[in-house]
Amino acid sequence: MKDAGFWNFRKKRDERPAAAAIAYDPLQALPPEVVATGFGEAANEIIAVAQAHGIPLVEDSALAEALARIDVSERIPRELYAVVAEVLAYVYRIDAEFSAEVKGAASKR
Image 1: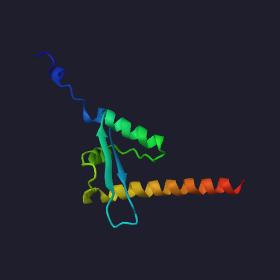
Image 2: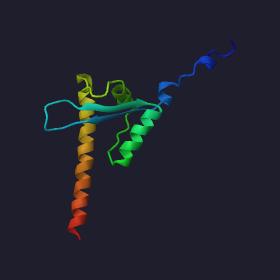
Image 3: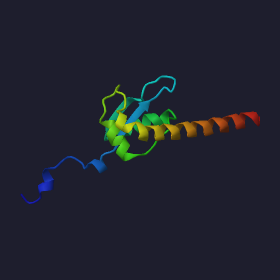
Image 4: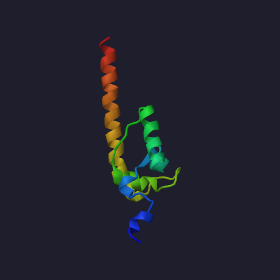
């Protein structure tokens, strides 16, 4: 066999995108829930749906890879609490900034 890589049809992990979506209700005492996961084309679809609905995206390949391996409807594991908390803090900050901009623009009318 001339090239052993010829028979390896799987892409390397860093060439295959991963994506995950989480839902979190701060009024409940539960960790965030994984609501969508995927690799490859499924990951691209998750990203497209999020963009179409104005859902903030955070690019973190290691986190996406970890979350994409969790079953949908499962709560995130304790080991990911800290990094997911950072993501949620970022999303809440972006949301607050956007809300302030919308309120500011509305008050100028």
